[in-house]
Image (tube, rainbow over the protein chains, first blue to last red):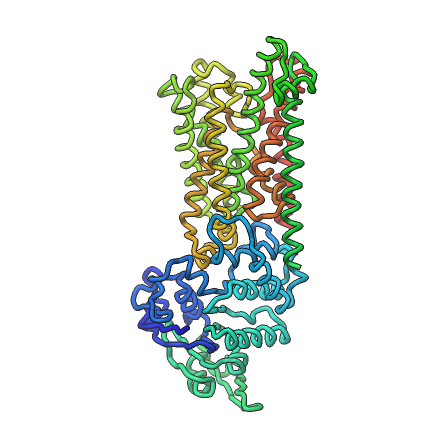
Length: 265
Length: 343
């Protein structure tokens, strides 16, 4: 499984959200996409998930463009963790998780197979959400809900896993647990994972590759060591930072309050 | 954990289907048995389900009452399914053909249709098409108005109330004008009544209700995915616009058939899906059949209440059906709004 993004441009009406994006990622790799708010991280994930259509360029999965796949087959290949799941009509966690198996079932089949339930059971156990299965989605805490939407994406058993801010609302322990798990199954199942995240430290801990986006453009791509340098991050985030090394990991710390560096924010 | 939980859900569904069917049969028999002439329910049951012979005059009355009971059952089922689909496609638990104004715009279209072509009153099946165009117009008007107001679930309800009030007023005036043509008190149209439905009309209620219910159940996977968002449905390979348009079409058609034959019955489309979700959850595979049964049962019970009030009050004529559903349904709407605000 390999993803090649080639000269992709995305427009929302007259606003250009992604400009000339090209990169490739291979199986077993966790790629982190970082950048300030509005840089185009979510749009990039949605474009790969085929939710947003690029105006120019193409995305290839194993040599075939996304548009060559039928939309139901794409559901077996790509799973996108959408942070904006609607919870206005009450439904239970189990009802929500079952929908993740739809790409594997014939459209009109009313039965849920033993295997489908086994996958749900296995992943609920691994992500420690078994006790939440009978709860209503709209009554979960933000942290619980975050784990549910990640579990759902994994239940879809994708070859390409796209996660938008998977560590949001999670405490320190769950952040590490979730990202550990994503890293492990990316390597074990030889899938491709692309994670949009704000937390630079988590990116430096788990990324095989980091893509830095600014105003819809890739301004750097490489390993965390290559990408996390002071000049680049100060330019992208417009803050003064210091980078120190701890256990061969890079720790990025803002060092001055914004008013002292004449922020334009 | 997932497997036993799922099994329990299926069991709940089956038990609900069984119990609802049983209660519907009992209510159905009671509904046929009561009227100005009271019959023994056991005798009626045996006559209907096992074809036991009865006196000719009793048979004639039973046949007349059957049409009315079927009309109540089928219009309730249609409105309930229309309500469920509207709640799903707007992702708004307060949606219903009555609250969103579809019923009033459909009735206005019917009134205009009767004014232009009075013979439509005899061939009511053609009224379905007219009512359908009216219902679709109401749906588009309410959604457009609510979008102007920000598109939240409350602006949808407020927009619906505005559209419903406006067109209920207009249809009121128009029906008053054509009262001579429709030959029944126009209030029956405005507040619904199953008593004016004839035996020849029943197939036009039965066939669309059954066919559209089957289509809706077949769509359970796209509908379930749609509940969680357009983008969510898309990533599972479903087309959210197609799901929305198809469901709006089905809702409007189901509303149209009830308007054409029975008139406006409020709140069934709101209450039945909530009761169904309480019994069997929000998975459309289970909630659609339960909603249809609950809607049918509620409307049949309302019709029985209408009959009882008329018998025991000794008043001339009957109350419209919609009056009873409003008395039960409006407090339910108030409860849902309060619950939602609190949450």
